[in-house]
Image 1: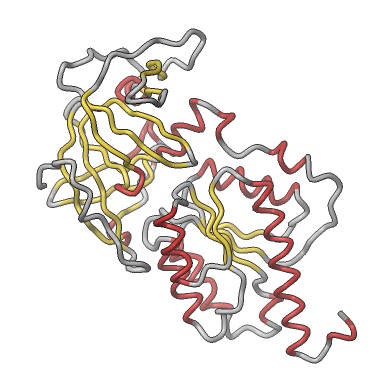
Image 2 (image 1 turned 45 degrees about the vertical axis):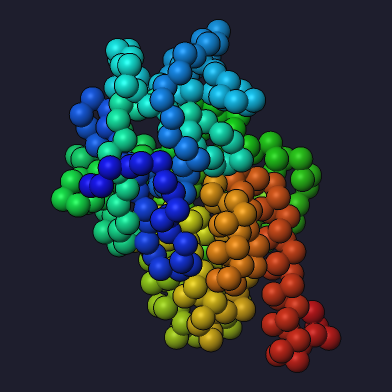
Length: 322
């Protein structure tokens, strides 16, 4: 791998190519990876102020420039043991879920650009105690890299920053909705939370898929089945980061397909920022929402489904019965 020099000018800019740039780093000589899109900067580790009653993996806080930031002791989180702080340790400063969090690592090795198809979901024999935390195994320039689910890590350390069922409860009493909703989400934890939230919101016909490829395969399978399209799929929700096929590639395929292009599609991801929003718009996403805004997701789903069904009835000449 090439040495990382802090220059992000070469990060992935194309839309819908189904590729990812992975930054590899080490902890106790083991290689781990993070999506470059989540990385704001790399900096030398600085002194940290401990915080009382915090999760054991939270090292404390520090203030680079004018912003107070939480530091997660990633070696301790992964090994469940205190690790010696090294003088050459680094902080990977991340930006996702509208939060800035620094993660302590030992070294940063470099950046590799690979296809999502080359990232395999680990099974229990590979992930062991890290089951659910390792989102995929990537081969970067001959090295095997365990790509970590940083959303899962933060959700475990600070549950209040993740999806909250209380947001659904605040929506009040809701009608039962039987329209078929297709959701692509690779995180085991977030998939369970999304399904539970949508069910509580009245959406009782939700089908979950582990990645964009599985959802796209499902769409191509149902294309020739009898019945109207809205009886097969009324809305698609997709994450961006997923093995095999990411959400941007899925969006591109859906919106370029003559049969499915009018189906509402929402990108629901921790990576929504200005650059990612532009990508999603270019690909035709109907809406883009940042996790963990599950209450807003439901509200937008209500609107897009009603709009989709209205158009379908209008095209079929059944508006009088709508």
